[in-house]
Image (cartoon, rainbow, N blue to C red):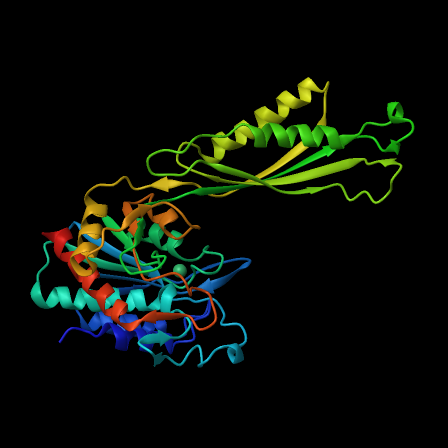
Length: 385
Ligand SMILES: [Zn+2]
């Protein structure tokens, strides 16, 4: 009998695995995967200033290609449990929905991966390659001791993965709506301009930094960075704050600052955008006869794209087989651990509905948990066919 995705979902929700606590979730998965013949490695990491984190890598078979399911068992805190209709760590089914912290993001998807693999193996006991699981306990936290370091460890061990499916919740409304084939990058920048404080009645004795700041922000904001392309919307720059903090009516302030965030597509990199910001500000500084300013730029993630092809066809085909829907290939949304995996192999994301992720009364439709297990089994069938 193949494993049941619902039962395993309930067992995982019972594990109080709030980042960075393992909570028994990795032990449970290791136990189930070993019973299916997988070899398991626990890969804990620690680093000064960040919490210790446990991770799991499991592999069945030694041949290539190696198809990897990736995800996280850690969950965000439930907030006040009294706000929930049922205990966030006691799974409960009401009206065809399974309630519990992590139901959507993403314990039920992990359960579906394991159950789907178990169903696939019933029909195909000797797959022409390997199946693996990369499960981290540090996706919702700083993501320092999780997937990124496990991938480094795998490289050292000669563990090569050839394709990866991340089970983050990707669907807006219905299972089959949307898969992700890439993500936008994100850059933050603080611009600080310094002048000389003075009396507004004697401006020739002062140097007002505010007009210079406004011109620089306008130079950054007014010219679009691109028009987007086939797979990404246009890069978006938002001015998120302008701070002078001057409560005095007759005072020219000494300093003014502003902040921007850029969500960028694959026509840019963090480095190319940093250069563009520096160049546009330098042009303004020259035009106004000089400015004393600095830029504090940090790139929190680069954009990436797995171009539509074999892997996205495999996943989209499996989604269509089970749901009858053609999923949209999207690059919207925030970041995920796929940003680390993309340096190692082709990666796409498909999971449950994301409407209740991180919310009170997080839930998943029981029928969709079973359908997701069927989709993941079909993914393996199509990948190894
Ligand atoms: Zn998640």
